[in-house]
Length: 290
Image (cartoon, rainbow, N blue to C red; front, side, top):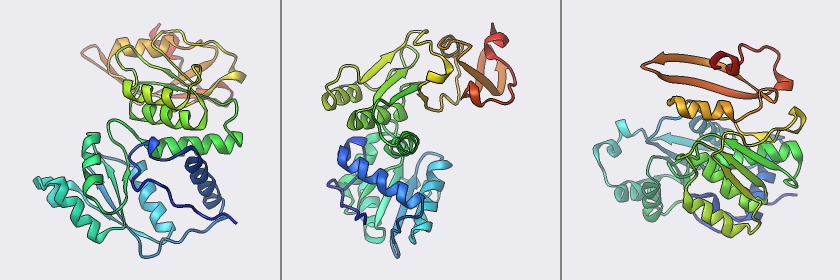
């Protein structure tokens, strides 16, 4: 019988707010809940949602999860609450603490999230800031754990800007002993403080590899590392060329989702697939753009 343990830290603002043991415990509970092998009752519990940034998957996942676990959510849209009128974070956090049992916040500046946590008497969860997206990292590592059963010899490759998701994957990977490889354009590397923290957690020099070179690796398709869904949008041509030149065309095929050309700046939505799973190829970007 699996008994949930109480996490040592009150808030979940960063991937580093939980230990390796706590990450593994959370993943184990998540797997059992997903497979209907464990029931967690959150009856009469209320989750307050403050989303300064637009969201689809994160918002829905929080709301659906609370609903299925017996709890409820309150969506505090800044445009329809006092938050949008400039109410201080201190006041908002104090008020919500009286009504809600937990608060999930999706905002821009990470310091704003920390300010909410400072004044809130209830747990605060990071639903995304410009610095980190720890819930996304947990979800990604849950998927990896389901596929490989453990994290031994797993290599996680992230291709894209060194953004909040990359930062959280780096930190969570360090906790779990997963080798993380980041390929990003020059000038868009992950946060230097995040890199420093990851190296302090995992002393293995091979644990984290970051490159801005156009050619990172050439492998047979059966040896492709786990690929995070890549960049959604690329606006600058030179950055776009970086991603195109990054791969051996025989290894990975890119499918154009949409495209628009205006004033020599491209807006292209891409998804990367393992070639073995592609049944229909719209076009090869390598040939299309030469």
